Structure formats: C-alpha cells, structure tokens
Image (cartoon, rainbow, N blue to C red):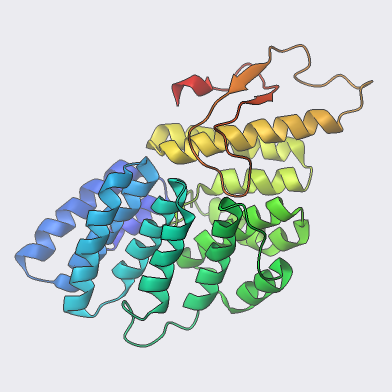
Length: 304
C-alpha cells in the first residue's frame, strides 16, 4: 500500500493518491513499520507541492526524515527532500532550495552510503535554480545533459531531471539538449505518466515547451491543451499557472514566426493580459504583464 500513491501521483490521480497515502500512514503506524511510514509521508509532501499547499511541505518532510533516521530506509527521504527544494524554488527562494539539496542530498543524511547518481540530479536542479536567481549557468549545459543521459535510468526518479533539462535547453536556446530527455518523457506520457514526483513537473507542459523550441507549433498546442486539462482536473494549481504562461509564450512566438501574408489561426481574436502568480523556471517572472494572442476556447487565466 505505501508504494501505490507514487503510481497514482505519476498518473495524475492525486485525490486517490492522497487518500491511499493517509491510509498507509495509519496502517504503518499501527504496525510500527517506520520505513514505509516514511514513504507514505513523502507522498504527502510531494502532493502538497503539486497542489500549491507549500506550508505543509516542510512538516511532512521533517516527519519523513525522522522516520528515515529511525528506519535507515532512504527512498522516502529522497522524494521528500526534492519536494521541499521544489517548494522553495516555486516560492521564489532558490538559495534555500539549493541549501536543501546540499544539506539533505549531498551530505549523506538520507543515504548511509553515497547514492552514485545523486550529484548529477543536484547539478541539473542547481542550474535551474541559478536561472531563477538570474544567474548564468556555471557549467556547460550540453556536457551536463550528456553526463546525465549516459548515467540515468529511464525510471520515475529520472522524470524530474529530464523535465529540468528541457527547461534548461529552452532557456539556453539549445534544442539539442532536449532531444533525449523529451524522447523519454514522450514515452512516459504514452504509458500514462503525467507528473514527475519529488521535484514536480507536469509532463505535457514540458513536452509543449520542447515542441515550441522545435517550432512544431500544432504539436506544442496539443501538449498545452492536454496540460491545462490535466492540471484543472487534478487540482495542480502551480503547474496550471505555469502552463498558461508557457502557452502564451508559444502563441506569441508562433505569431512572430508567421508571415504577415499568411492568415494566423488566431489573428483578429481579442488580445488578453495574463497575470500569473506561479513562477516559471527559466522565463521572465509572470508578475509582469504578458500579452499574447490565444484561441477563444482556452480557459480564462483569471480563474487560476
């Protein structure tokens, strides 16, 4: 039971995942199975980030780490630590997010022996945090992507860094960086995966970013439509806001590429002002007003 919320979270069935995680908490507490108790707590930390309940992430993470210390079972601690770092990043505090990664992941507080790929995960997320802080990457992104692609396994733990690499490639304007990560993400989406866990991303949104970078506008639009639908249905509010922003960016880029003599699919539609409160990695802060054309059937961003 404690492992099932992970599957449900990745599939976007967040209500079911939370219900099962809480049942697992009760069960594991009753039999004093602190290893799986830590796993259940880590799922609740991850779900809190997805729903934007950031105030709940730290208590769940601290409880998870306490159970990890008692049981020496590390995997729930890993997920909760990434969720905590992600929550600080989404609240606009990259320094604290980096501190969490250094303090919990790299210090071996969670793992008795070093997890070999942990430094690569941290390196990828560190570049994302540097972008949020307005700093340039401090290592070559193609080399970082190549190192990660070589060593990572295409499992659920790698979904988040694959998503991060796509956002890094988009920010740097380097489509080559995104090719292999987006291939793995597309395969995961075909199998039903919608969200990463730990450091959370909405996979259709990330694939929309990649399609935009490749200038495959219709494919990008399809991915963003899927992302909006999934985010609204599951209650993933931060990712919903980021999807609206990335969709607006795509439509603006598409319009810019269109030849003036070719009728644009949205030309003549009303202009809108999107003011979003969710932060988007590697892009302009959405607290500024972003103007773009959009088809009339796109949900009203004022309802975010």
